[in-house]
Image 1 (cartoon, rainbow, N blue to C red):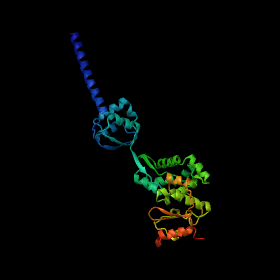
Image 2: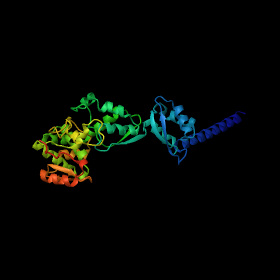
Image 3: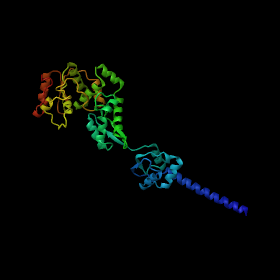
Image 4: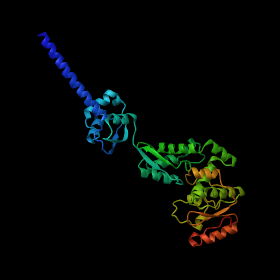
Length: 346
């Protein structure tokens, strides 16, 4: 009798072991096998403090995992249930549950691309940020045009105009306007090295003056290869005490510019009207890229004091006013394009 009971017990134990083994194999298969190898990527939002049970249900509803129960057990066994991070994720049923847990545990949130071209103003950058959906233009300007923020970064004017580096950035949806500004300014600091600061000093320029000059070069450039030549014109004029007389600075100083630059604008005093003031304006008129900054620091060696647009993105460079006047007559004949010639006025 005892023997029969023992045999029955052994059989039950073996059966239980076989069932447990089968369940374990099935569980491991669940953990390492995608629910759908062809499943498309989907965006899921995990809220702060969201319980793993709710996350599991969310994954099942979207078809990313096949079993909420098994997912919760996997999360409990690995300890990931206490470490899942909130955020916006791009997940797919083609990802095994174990990989899904790893992504959620490590906080590998979805990143959004933000591309800022060279030569945008602060306002234009704010508009680009708003268009990306990462922050509102108002929030970004509230940070980037805050004198206290500028002082914190050691910038000698009241905004970060010129100091937000044009580049392609990847940001999570949860990014704040302040963090966006910080990242863009940090990129500027990485590009404008200590060696460049030393080069600026050797030219008799502060970093701020260099960035201001680079912003003007950026706005005047149609053909990138001309940057060093354009830079040489401005350096030569500054060295001779001549007015820079560049339209982009005038435009920057006009409130609500409508796209039509007139003689009245050129004759209206503003801190940015370089047809009236001598030297550089008080600050950058845009956010220059690496090549414009480099051109400001390493201009071409040229005798040029003037340039005029050919209306195709390139310019004619001149050393003397007479040849410049001839170029103006050739390329800027239309009355609507008439401008006071450089150094023509008393």
